[in-house]
Length: 281
Ligand code: MYR
Image (cartoon, rainbow, N blue to C red):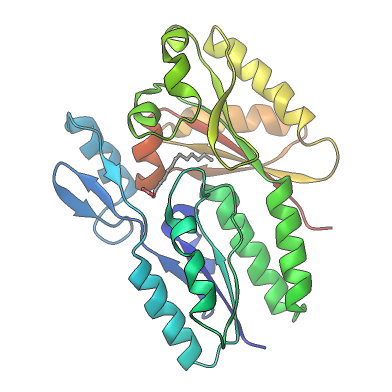
């Protein structure tokens, strides 16, 4: 058995995992003021936030290119791979997962496991890391897919954005359009629901109350087993550190991560995400 993992750039893998011989990343293009960018190639995180601030029209993204995935699978087959785990953006926020389902019948010599991860960003990167670790220990493929299914089921994320405009205009806030009028002077807590869509979870009056409530929500959502909590920010490192310290003092196992251009496009600057990823037993 020779197993590869393919993900997309919204997983923001660490350099260490990105460089592994059996880990591959599909680019998610970002468009700003008529130019096309690929983060990490011709766009740094800081350049993205600077450009977004300097441009009146909101940036946009598009799905990874399906032909890149097809080429990658052909290459893996030619290189003797037998199994491929594909971990991509949630079907609730991008059409990509839906659009690649047909590939399962196109590569009869490869065993493909392309679950709907129902998430993105650092928790998606965590799934890649866990897969890599399991492959390294020569775990059977069935064991890996069962563990991943369990991880997906137990993963979630909450988000507090500075401004809902990006999510609403980009069409990524599922129940937002209907209630936008009611959201004007409040700080909603958003979450990924069980279909991997972003929805308004609770409407809170002030930022201070929203964070207080969020700490309770995180405690409620991590009480049944050990979790890692990712505090992920879009260009507000100080706030992320402050919140991470608060969470660490409450006993959470916290890592800080950054939303790059792909996610920053849809959340805008000043957002904080809280990814909850279960630790393997
Ligand atoms: C596409 O355009 O289809 C690909 C990129 C879609 C990205 C949508 C991101 C939505 C915000 C995700 C927040 C994550 C919080 C953990």
